[in-house]
Structure formats: structure tokens, C-alpha cells
Length: 186
Ligand SMILES: CC(C)(COP(=O)(O)OP(=O)(O)OC[C@H]1O[C@@H](n2cnc3c(N)ncnc32)[C@H](O)[C@@H]1OP(=O)(O)O)[C@@H](O)C(=O)NCCC(=O)NCCS
Image 1: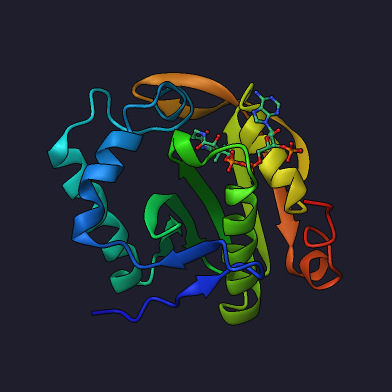
Image 2: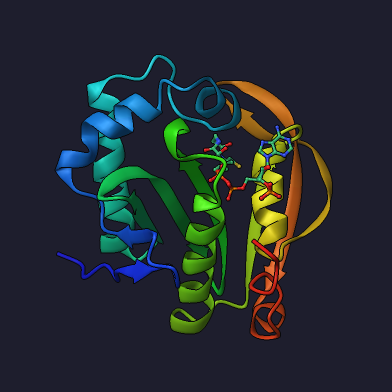
């Protein structure tokens, strides 16, 4: 089994750890959320077999070296996932949080931890972010973490067979090292 690094936010409130089989019910519950269904590519409807498949998939990312995926834990409770999908010396980032944990900086803290690991430990040169146009919460998280939103790519994203325009952005290791993204006020 791959050793998944455990990461903790400076205030100790947000923990990133390996996913566990026991996260399945919470993964399934989170995936019923309309924003998860609207803004990500998860299957709809989403059942227990989808949650089991997801947990297998994230374990496989570590095992195959194709990516890094962490379960986000808040107050000892599974709260969501943040992942880096590797491509050469760049990665793309993805994230989703359970509705109960939203709106108090949890994902911003989780993304910062994943980015710091990616840039410092994994030696990434840059990280790409994309979100469906209109996903303001995702964009705000990306911007607070230092991403530069570079524009709109027409028809870039396909979710359940439908093509959508996407906002795209990036963050470079040089910018991260210069403090971009960690100096934001929240
Ligand atoms: C995107 C998501 C991960 C944000 O998680 P979160 O923990 O609530 O994020 P944070 O609290 O760290 O930051 C959210 C920011 O977005 C802002 N925000 C939230 N909803 C917003 C909206 N509809 N319009 C504008 N800003 C919004 C918040 O005010 C906050 O900014 P602030 O700190 O300046 O006030 C969460 O909403 C989610 O899981 N959404 C569904 C899945 C998804 O969209 N994933 C990303 C796919 S690219």
C-alpha cells in the first residue's frame, strides 16, 4: 500500500489523509448535492457502487503514481476530497466539499496544503485549475490560493455528455514560493 502523506492546516482545523473504505457513505451523501452534480463530472444518480468505485480510483492514483488524492477531514469527519492529477511536471487540481463544511475556508486550507505538497515535495512546476463557467465558489477558492484566472476556454469541459465552457487558470511554483496564495487574508 502507498504511504499517503498526512497534512494539517496551520490552525489544525483541516486534515488531509488517505481515503478509507469507511468514507463510502459520506462520499455517497456528498454526491447527492446539486452543486456537486452541476459542477463536477460525478455520475448522476450516484449510488453505493459509485462511491466504492471512487475510493478504488483514488487509491489507484497513488498506487500508479498518476495523481495524489486526499480525504479532507474536519472535526474527525470526512468532509470531501482534493486531488492533483499529474502530467509530467504539471498537475491539474480538483476538489469537492460536503455542503455542511462549506463557507468557512475549509477548501481554501485544503487546496493550500495540496499545493504546498505538490510544489515542495513533488517538485511540480505549475498547477492548472478549471471550473465550469459560473462556478464562483470554486473560482474564489482558486483565486484565494493564488491562481491567475487566464480566461474562458470554449467547450473545454464535458460533463455527462454535455459540453460546457470552462474558466481556466494556473499557478506556478515560482509564484507559490514567492508567497502568492498564502498571503491572502483568509
Ligand atoms: C467550491 C467548494 C469546494 C468551495 O468550498 P468552501 O470550503 O466553501 O470554500 P471556502 O470557504 O474556502 O471559500 C469559498 C469562497 O467562495 C465564496 N463563494 C461561495 N459561493 C459563492 C458564490 N455563489 N458566488 C461568489 N462567491 C461564492 C465564499 O464567499 C468564499 O469566499 P470568501 O472567503 O472570500 O468569502 C464547494 O462549494 C463545493 O464543493 N462545491 C461543489 C463542487 C465543486 O464545485 N467543486 C469544484 C469543481 S471545479
